Image 1 (cartoon, rainbow, N blue to C red):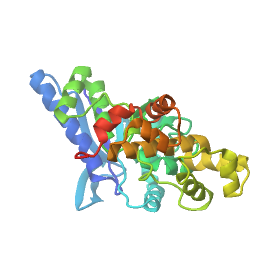
Image 2 (spheres, rainbow, N blue to C red; image 1 turned 180 degrees about the horizontal axis):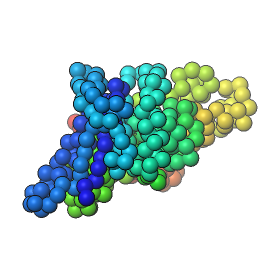
Image 3 (cartoon, rainbow, N blue to C red; image 1 turned 180 degrees about the vertical axis):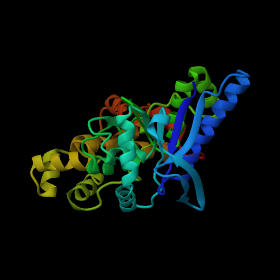
Image 4 (spheres, rainbow, N blue to C red; image 1 turned 90 degrees about the vertical axis):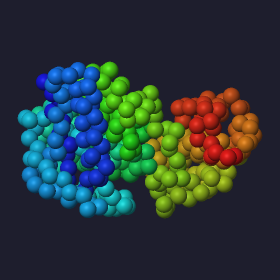
Length: 329
């Protein structure tokens, strides 16, 4: 029996997040037909919403959808939201009341619910991620922690399956999700062959190499911003929590609490991430040796910093430089 997949569409849906699963699952059906002529299609996919009819999602794109009925589906794929600012994202989440109710009904019916990118925010808004491990677009990690503190966020991971819910990282990770659906429907061999057709590397396990703290959403005012500016000027020096707390004119306890709220890390863990971020930039843009880079990042022990780098980035410094250095340098 075919895996019945519904792709949830609403007015805030991102067009590409809607068409990606349609294309990937259609390719799976076509390839299965080539490999096994006469065999039934492994996936049945359709667009669904809280009401039937035409849904305009922006950029002049319209989708015709059916009413989503949990008893007619095995899997519900929740599309990512289209937005320009975090404020707009939050307003759109607040407006999707009918969609939140639908998600709760699907969860009560034990459907598998999957999403990519910022679609995790809609699941969290419906309360489906409370107490669960989840991931989302890496640049939205701080907003997720602030808005949904009950979510066990593991932002470095590409895809997390916790019970009947799957969340994935930023945009193209939706194809990792689609390949998982294809594996459920048609087996590992079909999923592997579709990944080859789509040029999707299923071996990647982490968003960490792609994370850029310069692009990530971060607190832009108050204590956390003051602390980060002070730290950025002193990454080459020995830094203590006491010194940072004195600069921010708060107690160490208050500093620890605010860093956990804003960054999901202790001050010293955050300093380590800043130092790794500096090392990444130097590996990408200079010919400095790793030993020279380590010194500019406030470390004396090269081996220790190499281990830290690999732990944070999920790649060795040499591998990172080879893959991400700006060509021509």
